[in-house]
Length: 93
Image 1 (tube, rainbow, N blue to C red):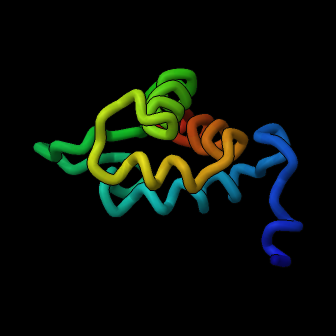
Image 2: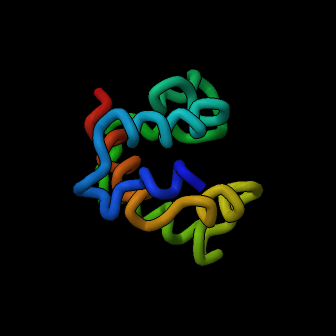
């Protein structure tokens, strides 16, 4: 419960460190810092446009995009968290 009180009110309030910590959960499939291994069927996220990443996560969240586990994962994040993570991944080069 205490952690919820510490959550930022909006993506603009999210620090780079918070966004990086949320994005770390993606590493198991999408690779460290969103750099998927060569030949991986899972796409890399690093350097992709923020708007594209938000659009895809929203499509997973609403079920508009087919997936195996991404529907469940996307539903675990607020829109603000998705925006903050997308901004962080977009900045990774």
